[in-house]
Length: 251
Image 1 (tube, rainbow, N blue to C red):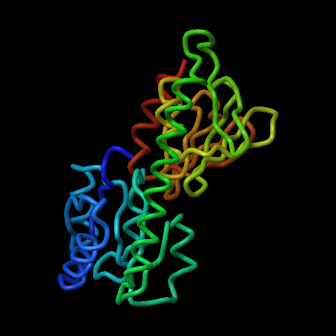
Image 2: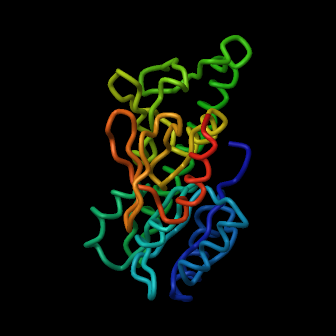
Image 3: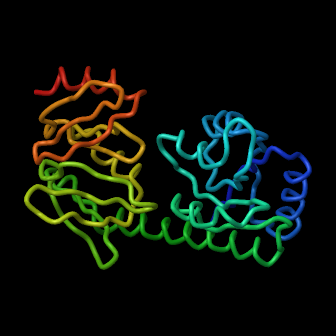
């Protein structure tokens, strides 16, 4: 891997941040710490300016805990290692596709193993991305088709046949017209990059939909869209106005 791993440390306790920074500098030299945040809001500000590979995230923080912070992020282009003094949140943590869950005081071996996982995942993603670029990109030959990586190969399909995509941890579940859904080994943001030019829109942090396949938009406290197949998909508050404008322009 040519570039170092980048991260930020999110913890409301300054002593905890200082200790973790020291451990990383001493035992994980491959890490470049881009910054520290004492709250969820500070973390959002740093992430908006920088793009870390992962974050060390405390769970119990005043005002907004670690889980609420992740819920507030529409797109999550980073991986997460939770750091906490409490062990009762482990199950909930892994529902957010956490790479690891470290208990304070942080064990050096556990820290290096967790960082090793991040490193391996990044190397694998970079190799797969390069392989796709070299072998499976078909825009000039078949502009109407795209390739979607799965655990055992690739699926070739047309964006017109895709109804919606749903985040599934670090993977994406793709729903096709008249076919069973496919589990793609790429995060939802990857699908968003590919499909946005084809009339798709991220209407929720977990949902990307084909606007051409929306049957109805339902207003209300919990706004939603109804797809052609009858599926109902929630629309986040911050995406409602943009979606209404987009739907008015769908040809």
